[in-house]
Amino acid sequence: MTEERLPSWRPGAARNTILEYLDGIGDVPVEDRVAYIDNDGTMWCERPHYVQLDFFVDVLRQRSSHDPSLAGRSELAAVLNNDTEAMDEMGLERIAIALAGLFDGQTPGEFASAVDTFIGRYRHPTFNTPVRSLVYQPMLELLDELRRRDFTVGIVSGGGTEFVRCVSPSLYGVPPELVVGTLIGYQFARCDHDRPLLRRTVSLMGKANEGAAKVEHIQAQLGRAPIVAAGNSAGDREMLEWANAGPHPGLAILIDHDDAEREFAYESRAATFDETEPITTIADRLGWTTVSMAGDWTTVFPPPS
Image (cartoon, rainbow, N blue to C red; front, side, top):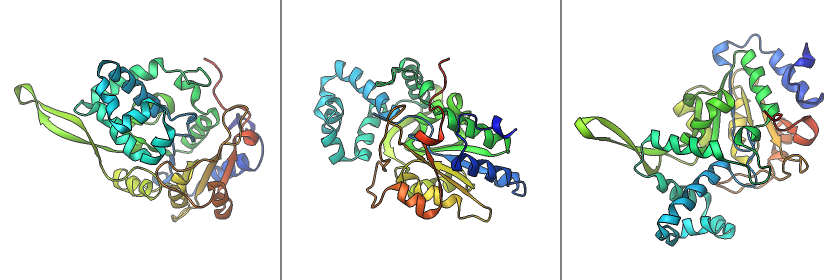
């Protein structure tokens, strides 16, 4: 029956390690079977831009066509002009806060509606495909295999929590309460007839969800440590290390983007801090399971529906 599991994975060290690990967890209590998976670059394509960034750029362009004064803010001007040098100099966190201001004062429902509308018409700039076609088929199969083993599966992303919560149920089968990301603040208010109302703000609650912050936020928001973790960049390092640090045997999986023909070939890097060595080098030193897109996956994206 082994050949029917992870069907989009080629036979080899990565697939064998994953299946052998899952076959050997029978003594691990179900309540301890927890897996956290990064989103951008691990569950779906993050190049040439993050999908969430494309969403905010789309909103910004629409708003600026009616309100040209938006282009007077340096962060938003850099985004509108695709000035990567200026954006790199400002940093992703500063850009993200400026873009979050486009939804300042809106309710969670209004934000979710905007995301749904965008996702419904979005096409990837390189592949000209919808969002569902950008999800990695082998990773969907891995989620299925984890669930067959009674794992609780969560998505832990550097992206905005609310954006990922909008897409995770339909794309990954992960409910909103199992999504951990970068949090924006909310303000409680009252509207007509003293009815409670919640509105978005531009403030960040805590740090951007990368690096050590991922571990801190998982504990603060979910309270359960993983024994399986998967990521693709230095922003996932501490989460992957944490999966191997508990009382049960752990499995740390690194996705290596080395497939220029079917996706993109690049060195995955953290978005909010600089690292001193490639994450693949770290993975080799720490004994993680590195997955080569080119070598370990027979297909990258789902077949057309």
